[in-house]
Length: 131
Image 1 (cartoon, one colour):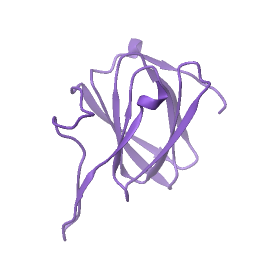
Image 2 (spheres, one colour; image 1 turned 90 degrees about the vertical axis):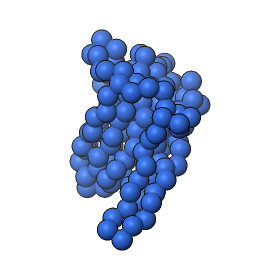
Image 3 (tube, helix red, strand yellow; image 1 turned 45 degrees about the vertical axis):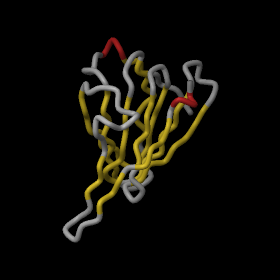
């Protein structure tokens, strides 16, 4: 299941007044459907997660800063790490039933997460572990 988590490069359009990063359009192969988008701020030295969505697919990008994501399989035995930076725009796709956490590698970072359904606390699991 961890192999289904993937990174895709995002298109960055350079302009003199400030660059534009294209996060998503409905033609992208990793787009499933729209549920909601939320932004999460994180300060260096803090970790957010472990979270698991039972049914939701996540499309995550980092519009500000640099963030390390750690993903683990449902049994928390296998691990993969990804780093997404504002300076190298990418989107991380996380399918359901994968645990994930993230931490900022810079003083302050922001992630944008698009999920394919409206958030439901019953659909999400959280776990506190020391890893």
